Image (cartoon, rainbow, N blue to C red; front, top):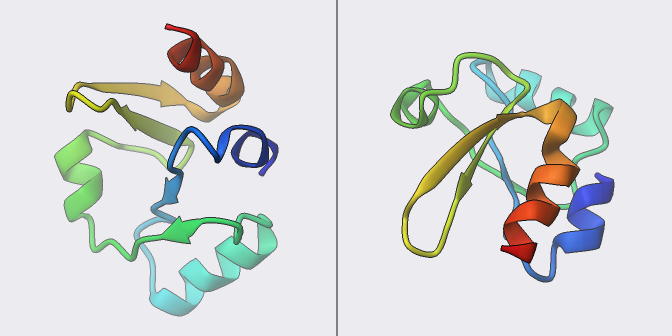
Length: 85
């Protein structure tokens, strides 16, 4: 993932591939070419805790514990905005 390659030295990226079997999650990670960072297996607990309702959602957790939820299409702009602020 390009945004992880560019900002990975300043931002920790962790994937939560979805609500599927482990083998389906592994297939998703391989097919989407997002194996360059850690992924967590989730049974729905993480999605629920962070208010995620669809696959193309991301959650930023700042050093102070505050969170911001966004949509995948604007990931790079949002990461840059958070780094600049």
